View 1 (cartoon, rainbow, N blue to C red):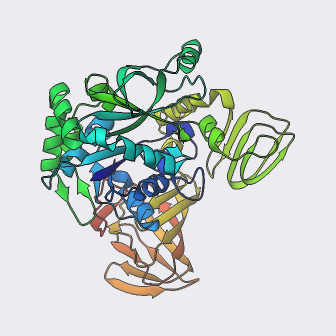
View 2 (cartoon, rainbow, N blue to C red; view 1 turned 180 degrees about the vertical axis):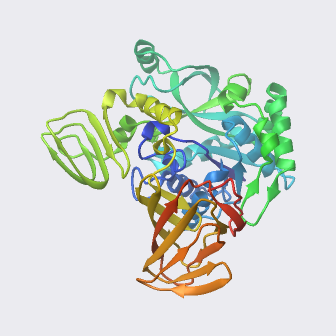
View 3 (tube, one colour; view 1 turned 180 degrees about the horizontal axis):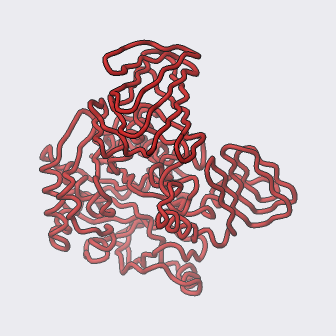
Length: 474
């Protein structure tokens, strides 16, 4: 039995402004109409011996994970929620511990949620081929056969083959090289890109983790034991997990164990780690451009242009990345897109919201789009899904005016309960408890005008929430 473990904890800062901390790249349809998470889940759904996946994600993303998997017909075996990010080794540890709860010792297939694989059948065949080695106790890493002297990846140097299969011993892991070294690696044929995908028995990984990082394993055991489960999610204990040492599976285990082997893989893999990587896997026009959205490109070559909300035009440019969203525009040389992370760092340092949120913010009940704001007012367009409701809440510093654009709204305002339909409106004074529900079968859309001395999302006092959120969670 193979249990796929999907790691969905990344933030994808190098794909800003499309990827944001609150809505990172794994939830975006960057290559086709499905998101990277959905494609990862569907890729393993075709494995004959695989169960439903375990998903490990940030607790802030839990509803996006559940909704996106539901949309493609996949019900995960469990969604394990990390209160804070501790890197991949603790994430894999809690998944392995959970997988053993039934008293079994399954084989785990560890997959990041944000990779692209062109040859899906080739990938599945490689998993089937290497499964006996995992069952025999080896810790398998999938090494990507390099096609260019890539300096953005770590490498794995392969040793001699174990047997007649393509599986080889791991001689050593090496850090990201300079160009000359990467060229040598490519020409030697002994080095593979480190993909971040792994396969092993739960017990084999945990035994090595106990030997090499016992404090990490102990923290993960306690965080799982003292966590809580509800209908949809498994919550790790916040205090215990936050104290867990932070490390990658490579540094914590794979680079130190003598049980590591590598399976060479040539399946059109890409980790979509930057805009240039996305350009590599996209479909280009006759001028070498990738065009998405409403774009007019004149005398433009080898350029990636993504227009999310408005017309974007380019004239006489080459080798650029141009990405437009509702609240930010990126223009970068394709050769320097790895430095986009520096932009995100500056946004965070100055506490600007564009580093964390899109203008449109998704919530378990729907979404809202902040379409205008100033010092004492803000205008939002709010969509509530059929049957969903916003928490029962109040605000200390702002009043709200609601105007129904489409659908039907059930409004709880103080002791009153009433319905509003298209073109009707109501007013919620400061300090009054209220709730908005969509009792209909179509999305409810309203315009909300906020006014007051403070308009931050943290001015919410929740009295009841069907999604289990507290006051600290917007």
